[in-house]
Amino acid sequence: MVSYVELLDLLDSFENEIKQLMTTANNAPKGLELLGAKLDSLCEFIICDENEKHWKQWEDREDVKQSAERLRETSSVALCMVEKMRALYVYTEELDMDLYLSLLSASVNEERSYAQIDGTAKVLFIGAGAFPLTAFTIAKETSAEVVCTDIDSEAVHYGKELAQFLGLHGILHYSDSHLRHPEFLKTATHIYIASLVPEKQEIIEELKSKVHPDCKIIVRYGNGLKSLFNYPFEISLIKEWQVKLINRDKCIYNTIILQHCRTVAGSV
Image 1 (cartoon, rainbow, N blue to C red):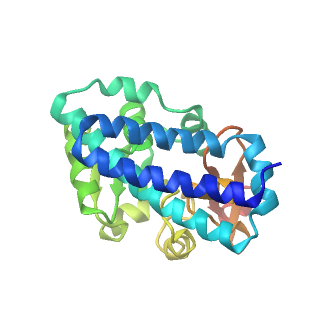
Image 2 (cartoon, rainbow, N blue to C red):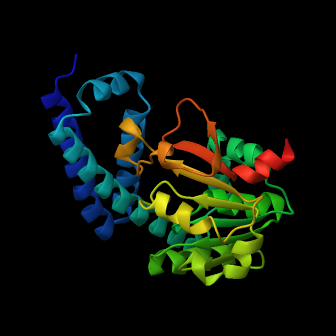
């Protein structure tokens, strides 16, 4: 059985190695591969059932909570760096984007199936980042109109360039805020909230009066061990929404789909 000291050492080791590799990635292309590999290792750590058992034993200790929060902040910054650099390499070196799309996990397509996204959809991604594979995949495969937003101006820049390179600029647009698109919000059929958006609850409350009653909100989050790589979310705080939980094994984040209770009740 792993002691809480050993668990702390593991968390701190991940944090320190990721920080070191971020410095390396800034100075050499090889560093990007190493940083990506380390983030993959963290994902493998998260989906390991044995690690989940250890986490549940020690997760309430304050020092474990603090180490987990530090690791999440570090991994979040690292992932943003990796996405920007990958986006840059794709459209400047003309790498094969189809390869990246082919590596999408089954969870993305499963979300699409549950949410019933087709070519008539209008999809908003909040916290899309520089390399939103889900958004690109939906736009490419369904031709649905997609708006991606992110508060990071660099992510918006790289995302725009990548959309242009992929020939999606006619249906996929980028912005620094979902509030800049009130008309799109009114008619959006689906809204994604990324797992790296910390203020999910506040955004959901904000959207309540701005979206169409039939709009589905897909929220990605990570509780427990998954909070090492995703911001957590308290489902019990959700009011006036029907909550549909998507259960998947071996996925690094959790997903719920929200829909207005009055809409669901009216369709029964």
